[in-house]
Length: 289
Ligand code: R5P
Image (cartoon, rainbow, N blue to C red):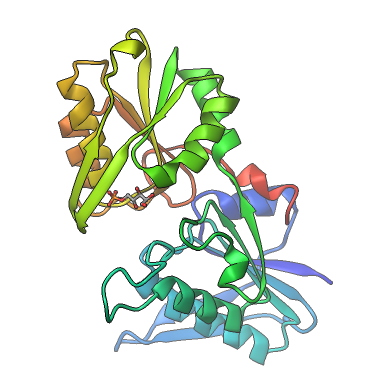
């Protein structure tokens, strides 16, 4: 079955797919009507073709409706299959009812995507209380892991790193990155009383004198998780930390605040386009697409 690409917004992933898989791009028109609704048109035949849409789903409320309308338009016009490559998969953190009356939106979002697409490829989804994507998706899902790419970057760029995970959830990737980068690691305890309030405890760092602290997390959103860890490290007068995140969500002001609090550098993977993208993980598609 012939595969064609629609690159909606993908950092460098669309380019990589065009170049590595020599995949042609499907001509479409997507624009807004004056009232803000979306106009969607497929400009060439999709009959019998598999269409692959690549779209990083930060700002999901804005992007998802158009994505679903596009998917339905492709099927209406005869596409045999429609697959989604979402380098960043949103909503995964709302994975339980933290307070009575809340929605488990990770499940609902997965069901919206499952109802429309034939398959999904993503990178490091935030799996915590939901252990596997298969628990909430009914379609085939495949995952690219950033850890080997991050470890490789650390090996090439940082002398004597000590990897710091800001919370218990981060242990899964911190441990892998530390092992691959032949570095020691520590994991902090985090409490999150509110959306923008974070408390962490950090162990005595004297043991790591001469090391470069590298704080590693999957998502940087408000930046508060990283900021708390940065503040604690600054108090201990260790070297300014390098902060590495997989997904550069960056709520307004987060990047600036992290730098102001003492981060030496902020580095992210290219799952959401941002000036901090220094680690290209789109190669991860080679063996799974
Ligand atoms: C949470 O469990 C995640 O792994 C990240 O620690 C969190 O999403 C970071 O969010 P923020 O930047 O808003 O502190």
